[in-house]
Length: 79
Image: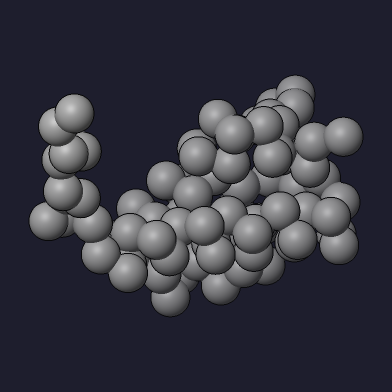
């Protein structure tokens, strides 16, 4: 049986950081309730994140079902 291929050389600790960022987003929504992306970005300090990381973390959290977009772009925790 062949061995699985090695992990991608582009996978770094920074890439794994997205799980932490997603957790920050979920916790902020659980603590403060539903809010728009701009408010959420302020709550988690996204202005200090590398460019595009906030949008990526939000998109992944939505794709994983951790948060759900509501009317008018309001984000809220699932469940």
